[in-house]
Amino acid sequence: MADVLTITQRSYNMSRIKSGNTAPELRLQELLVSEGFGNFETHPKSVPGRPDFYFSNHKSAIFVDGCFWHACKDCYKAPQTNEEFWKMKIGTNVQRDETVNKKLNDLGIAVIRVKEHELKKDAALVMQNIGKELSKRVQPRVLDLFAGAGGLSEGFIRAGCEMVGHIEMEKNSCSTLLTRMIYHALRKKGELEDYKKYITGRITREKLIEKYGLQKERDSVICAAIGKDNYGDLIEQVRTRLNGKSLDIIVGGPPCQAYSYIGRARDIKKMRTDERNFLYKYYIEFLKALKPKIFVFENVPGLLSAGEGRYLLHMRQLMLSAGYATDYRILNAADYGVPQNRKRVILVGWRKDSNLKSYPEFPVVNREYKVKDFFSDLPKIKSGGGKPIKKFSRKNKLLQDLGIRNPDFEFLMDHITRPHTDRDLEIYHLAVLAKQKGENIKYNTLPERLKTHNNEISFLDRFKVVDADAPGSHTVVAHIAKDGHFYIHPDLKQNRSLSVREAARLQTFPDDYKFEGERGPQLKQIGNAVPPILSEIIAKELIKHL
Image 1 (cartoon, rainbow, N blue to C red):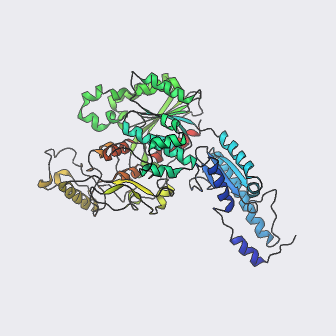
Image 2 (cartoon, rainbow, N blue to C red):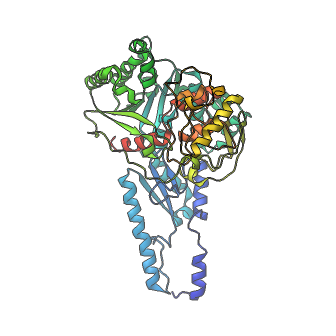
Image 3 (cartoon, rainbow, N blue to C red):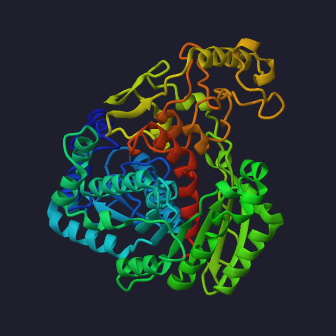
């Protein structure tokens, strides 16, 4: 049949067709949410082909293909005008589909393509088929030991893993973990509005657990200190949660203060008798009992030299006896997209029968952004200022692309800073002025009236400004909870230390990540955490070898 439209009319009609958020896409989105498959991203830039719907939990991508634009075999009819143009245009689309499919499959991501006419003809059948495909994509099961505030867990969840448990002894951290597990459950159900009600004080966590049946999420957080008297019971609790299924990965690292350079320098004798130095033995008991395919052990670089290297040697010998080959690297989080120079030992172990045969190559991230890009959209506040929560709608495309800003979350949490003395504020002012000249202020150069310590030999850099123009700040550590002297905000007009949210952003925690507790415990949780962006890169690479 001849084309009844003129060339001009046909050209105009084609130009009016949207490439994204089309009616079929919106219809499928509505169906996915209503059927309980609401835990997806739309058109994520980080995924090849920017699928219409990406399920990180299932490592599955869904494309809604217009029958004309993707040459549907059942109903495609080529235009009768400008035939060569349309042949090339549609052919290019088909070739692109094939290329994207291959890229995704190479990454272990399943591809589901829904034809426009299928959605119109039988939407129920389409949803039935999608449900079957997603159910085939079993999530790797992960246990987080010494979990802290959940930085490692967050990255593994983003990579599509199921957290079967977190074991952590600190109460505020346990509370943070539970809140985050509830967040992920509500996001999956498409019920983030109730999460917003919780963080604004309009509903309790217990009510949320009761309303949505989130006992599984509640029970996943085990608040206990792992030790010789209870590690066996804790292992049995994890076995109960696994319900006969195997465990794929264990992640975590015992408290690192005992191995830190500062800790060793101050009291070598105490370090030798510190029980925290031997918590790795209980980690290994979990390996022997639960037999994960792979594990990740994270700690500070001081681990390599602690006890003149004996701790690490003994640790790896025990891991080998438990059936695991191991290797380690010192990774700098700044090389993986984190705006912070943060070096940590990442030791990876793999079972002798696993697909992983050597230390994985974690892909380095090439980036141009700087520290100031993570602060640029935040409201300016003074010492002691800010609010625990407020409405917030400023745009920050970089942070949205990195997964730190959630466009569906219109709140800013914990952008609050500690109050400072007049003396401290005067020192901060001088420190920022020095930084603007490219210098770091030294304690022994301060005016005498501002000095309160007799020690003018060591720790001369106790006042330090975060470098706004650098690709990465200096390391955010738990000491930030004690005072803000080492984390002075670079803006002279604000004249204060970093807020809780600014510290969280330097660690790449999402803005919708709620840290429970008062300001001090919040900062301690943040300083002890593994940056989620780094842990996600680690997770994605390890999953390929399961």
